[in-house]
Length: 134
Image 1 (cartoon, rainbow, N blue to C red):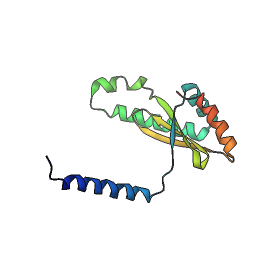
Image 2: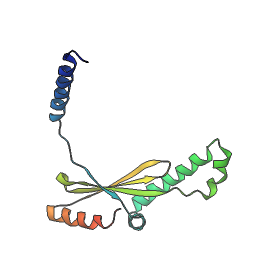
Image 3: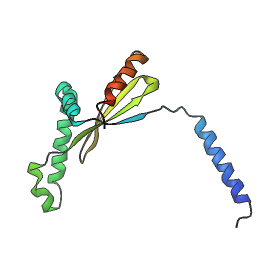
Image 4: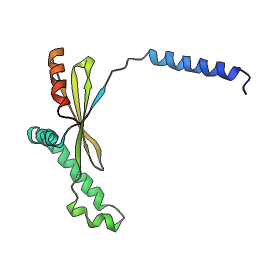
């Protein structure tokens, strides 16, 4: 039920958008999955900067809990231990693996990047991480 020019306009718009994106440089980032809890704990024990940041974010989450207007929420704030998890991403062209740490009710709080000198090292690390993520 169109006069035909709407379809031509739509096609022209799609072409403009496609050409606009073709001029930008994009980097491929592959989400490998969520790091198993035991590996998150292991990183927190080994990396003091990560642990410090996570602890501060957990304190902030508890403060937010106490600031709630709902008495049912503030009742359990003393025993509240915010959930910590990490997502793992591979950036093939940079030979890097990024681990992003998240704290419940706060969000992304720390990014840990591991770079590799050679493609072989990067591929070996990818194999290792595939066994560490769900």
